Image 1 (cartoon, rainbow, N blue to C red):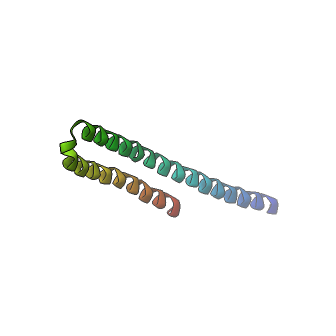
Image 2: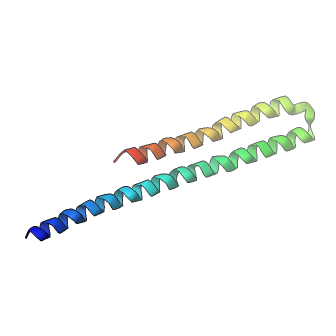
Image 3: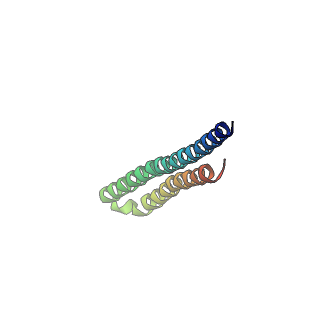
Length: 92
């Protein structure tokens, strides 16, 4: 009977380690995917801004300010992804 109880205890500890490991992998993937979208978006924002300034240099001021507003909004998505990563990693 003792060996059955030890086997059950080992299985539950193993299950806990498996769940913790899967949670770590899920949290890492969540942050990686959350950073991927804003990274692509920021690249598109600034490439379009550079193209717009090259076509009409007199509009450099407004284009630059709009590009930085778009950059801030896209970067906020990456920060939200980081918060979700921390919540997944340190809760539950």
